[in-house]
Image (cartoon, rainbow, N blue to C red):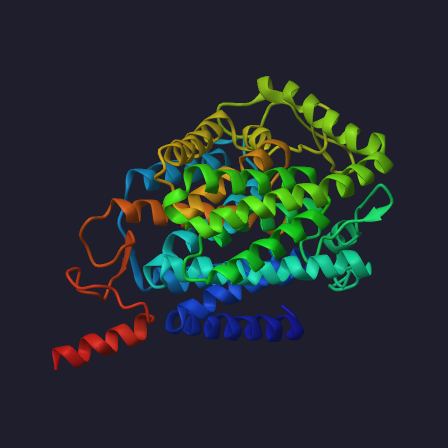
Length: 441
């Protein structure tokens, strides 16, 4: 190891320790910091230490370690199903049929993000988390609009000049129009992330009505300028599930505002989108046709691990029966991790749908359900991969909270240092311990 590498490693270790201690003391601030990394730092600005760690993963690992040190998880049946899902993703590496990259992605990206969402409500109120993420990503939506209108793409030249930046920093176009990508490296990743926040923004009861309407409008505008059809669909689905199945979560004034905004959005978006798509010609229809052909891969899944249809070209390019880009996370999960993992994932999504239909879904669960169309036609790419799994963890944490009729907090995770018969003060672990010590004295 060179002196430079040793200095960099030491600096990184000190920074990680400082972040860990800060996250334990101020978990709410650490969570907002993670949101900012997801929304404002492109994933190609990470570091390689054996494997490539994107910024959201690096900071997420530290945040998870800090949260895990101050909260204790109560295990519910859904936690067991999720655990088996990740075991199914990792097991092929042990028994054969897996790869280092697929296992790393499942653990360093998906699991880390899931645990942030699952653990955070133990020390930060779920409604505060909802309000905070809504504000952060509404700002992203507003900046995406500026990016589109001004043709200003600040992240194109921002990075280390690595291969990931060369691949993902180029701005996509459709019909001769540059699409907004912001820090996400892909217009669909941006659009899907912003669309996922709309149900949470609409039901953020900590936020005043006028501000909620403004935040939803900014998020919807950001989705529109991504010029991503599936993201627009998901934004519409998100509004629909709130209006139809989330009536207990949103007041009448907000429901009325959502209907008005939906009608205005249709009136504005329809000529805007159809004009761009008509200019795009075969490009837009061709991408849809290609996704339809991916269904041919449904019969090539292995029970566990990589599909036997995997092919690696001499230049290292990976194909599955001749298909290089697998634009469906559901299909990609089956090809990469096997039928068992895919079935468990579908079971979890089906449970979220059933809770929604029963009008028992929390805002995070509504958000996950509204993202199902994206999972069908797009792979989990860039920061969107971690963001979706964060929402999944938050959905689990908030759903099990509704089933708890007695306990230390309305959530299913509680700090280890708390008396289980006393309510949880959401001030962070250090202040909570001081309060207990003063009472003991």
